[in-house]
Length: 340
Length: 275
Image (cartoon, each protein chain N blue to C red):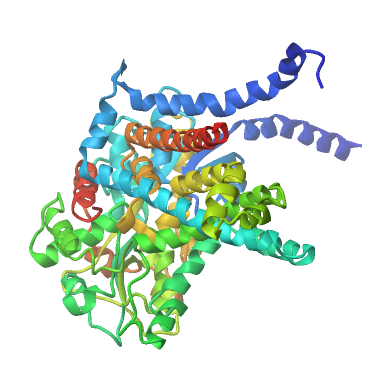
């Protein structure tokens, strides 16, 4: 009888707690890719840990940012992951909150470039990637980004469109190689424009490239490291270039929405995502390269990721301000010189 | 069928309201973006759009490719449809099935197949070099020709099916009668077949032209940014430049061109029928 009473009391005591847990809802806005894996590796374990409910919104960075802006007065998203440049754009529009690193227990474990990528304290990097050139080592030798435009090679090159994530970084490195390093990227765009008829295509999706490489339509293309795994499965001698100017890349970051009523929970979720355990699981599945320097992965995974402190230090990323201030001009210049 | 006009209208009202709320209203809001600047009604966005050389090039290219695909699909469509309607019933059914089959396959798969066919090591290049018509593999992919071929393959079945339907409705003795009266095959086509199948040509032409104007995957995959078209430019404006005004201008032009093509083709058919 006594046991039954205690059990009943315990059950009754749990009811309001259950109601509270149901009330705690965190809405996150993320990229649409690998959502099944994210659910298994990140969302479900976090829901269990926090006793809260996660609502996930997906889409590309620009679309989700536009939605955040439209709901500025009454935010519907608590936390978002976006590109570095979009994070700065959100910051300039007053859409995001300053992040208190003392609330992130894993902050100290991050590579330096991920701690405060835009230098404004409004974002934290959770993954980054290198961009270099994948090329057929039996057909050509790439020692510089400028080699892509050599007459003997250019007819076998696919170059990323300026509208893709890889476009501006590849142009930036080409500019460095050609000695035309200005934020407007006019020099490299002009150089590409002069060879536009020779270049096989200006690709939109890196997934196109594997087929083109397999069909020997192309011998080389600048790609992000996250696409590399597909090329290694081809029965062809494809190599990842280490040009003398270095590698470029990009980073995705986390932000907390200004005016969100769940800021502490959002920071808790960010911290969870940045933990060594979760970053290791995501890396081993080849979903995201880790921003947490304590992450150790197998050699096979490391070969397909942007991995290690040396790589992190060597990346030459386009500063977000330069990307944001010049984005429209890049497109207009590109359409003028290459798109005609 | 209905007791009066009011009853018919009342029955159509729910569907009309649904279409207005979920389709017409959003489209109207989107299109109005191109006519408003800082709260005032203006046509300046259209002026700005056409002042750019690239935009004009893309507009002309899209219109030209739409016309070319429609014209060529009409020529091939008449030949194919005429051959099919003259087959025995069993053969006719099989051929119609073959024409319909591509429509059941995703346009993405059909477009990607052309990458294999038109590639440097594809069958077209192999045939050209094998027959000695070319010294080496030609660059066929990522050209206007590739986009034209892709669009033609995508929409030709619609033209063939429309023309089959029109040819089947034609009086069976019309062609023999014209031949007996001394008409050659060109005269038979021009003076008999074309006037009697014009409705089918209008339907097929509208479907092919509108489809060619608004297709996205095929120009994006087979042409890329080397063969920029209005719909790929629209994607750039929305997803990259976040420029909804320019996107609205492009969307408006695509809609106007589609409606204009339909009205023009219908007028041509009506004018001919009145003669």
